[in-house]
Length: 457
Image (cartoon, rainbow, N blue to C red; front, side, top):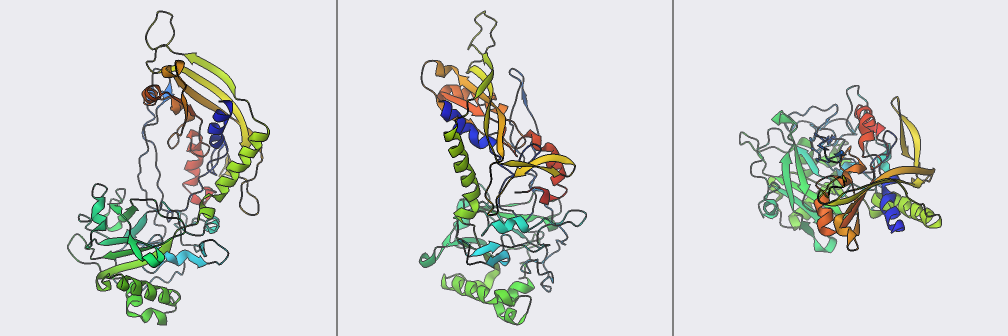
């Protein structure tokens, strides 16, 4: 039981992200620098126990398009900035994810390094762009990434939404998402779409194409867009760059020539799959990251921490226990129909964090070696909370590690909505504040939102 509890608490204290006030940030693949603020809107205090309820996260989908002008596609000349993708000149990094930023690299598992230009990712209001350097650790895009495009004033009424995912596989679907299965050819992938609800100007609403399944690691994906119309019923023209790839003139344009052969191969492949390319407004491919790039640093940290714990098993210290009765029995003990014991304590675990200033505020980030692997810097003591249900008084319970929401706390493991589940299924809930994801992030988030490169991972 003791080791099980320590193993449950271990990932909560390692440094799940790499930038926080007294904490660290998430090592995710960027999504074009379009910022999802994800701010919880209501703290929701549970008055009978003082537990702050985790009421969920609002996905506001805030878009920072940097220095770009989200104008209507007009078939004009491709943008001159080599850091931007000319396929969709209205916004620098669109379409997303783009093969433009996949730099051939024979040393990587996928054969690529993710290489953004100095100005590819968005800039803040003082023209400081997100630093692309950290993303070179990746050898492709994240497996949870959405596809993002901008078609101003888009009529999205006929596109599949989250209640009609099956329509994304229709033969005449306006958008095709395909995975390259090699000899198996291109295989359809289900998805749903939504317009960015944060953007108030229809001319600047991104279209999110969200895969209905997690993408495969180290895989090539193809996106095909055809027959889209704006709200006036006008079919969008191809961008000048994509038209050049279609008609073959891109080979003679120094701004486009590097990808000319790849687009010729792509269009030939689509034709071979029976897809009519004459109606295609835009098509491109991208590659997802490998298991090694996505998971190796975290798995290394996990394995290293477990080895440390096995060699010197820490002892959790219980600092407070409150007993509850299921109904008032006249003893004055607090009443809760589901929770028998509220337990608070602390445990010392390996740390992989180092102190760093984020703006004027002291924070922490992951310490890494020359290969990018997290390195132990000592230990840290973390508080934890445990809820034991009445059901556990008479039979053996199972352990559940509870993860709170954005800017929440580990104490939310004891929230009122968890208690009936715990008692009904005989679960002992354990939670700790997730480093880099908890309420201590409020100040660093405020600082880092002004310059996203401060989110070091």
